Amino acid sequence: MFSLVIVFSCKQESKIESEIAQIDVDFIVERFDKAFGEAKPGDLPQLKSAYPFMFSDRYDDAFWITRMNDTLQQELTNESSKVFDELVDEKDEITQLFQHLKYYFPEFKVPRVITATSSVDYRNKVIVTDTIVLISIDTYLGKDHEFYQGIQHYLRQNFEREQMVVDMANAYAEKYSFQVNRKTLLDEMVYFGKLLYFKDVMVPFKNDAQKIGYTNDQLDWAKSNEFFIWNHFMDKELLYSTDSKLPSRFINPAPFSKFYLEMIDKESPGRIGQFIGWQIVKSYMANNDVDLKDMLIKEPIEIFNNSKYKPQK
Image (cartoon, rainbow, N blue to C red; front, side):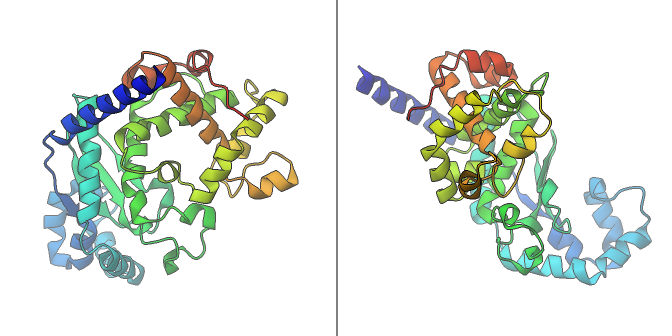
């Protein structure tokens, strides 16, 4: 019986993916980074007309002309152009993401996709609105690029071009997910579990390590120690705690998670609470007849109580 269920489920997923692949998506990747980097002062009016949202009214034309001639800006443009002469693979992956978004959210309209440099603003690698996707292309030059030498390794390990569509999917996950409160550790875990499950659905062509932004070794550690991590949370009564330190220990980006156990802390990846939240949401979706849209707006306690989540030793 179990084998038949697995086979039927796989056939259903294959059928859905075949339908998604037929969805028509039409867009171009607009290289504002190149256009601005190669522009002369006389080109500014035309650029401002084509991309008005890229030019804040707080700054006059003299500011933008100075920026065009700035040495750092020119270096960012040159390096971005070297790494991303073309974005053929990226456009293909973005197309697949948009196809999945249109399938699960029929109201989704394909936006303009625009690349720009941002002085390596890695806190805003991708910004999405209803009409625009803005990609900070200088945050995907490769983790060992000289521009990133002052940035901690746990952050720059995901400054790879393969993460571009993953970050875009995450931005859409934040847009479509909703929770009234995020007060407890469980609230935080389930919220980020929603975002990660959203990526399971929207970018199934990416592996789990890429979705969560771990190395393969970090993901293997999380999987191998899932039972221990869960027991630690339960034993220390952390799930419903509102301790303000818990997000920095287990949710927020960090070089490691903070169990306050020396050997474990050294080996663990950061954001381990996000990983556990992901497993809770996966278990909930596997054990309940709920569609993606409904899950994204359900409260954490409802998801947890109906998840039947219980990691095995």
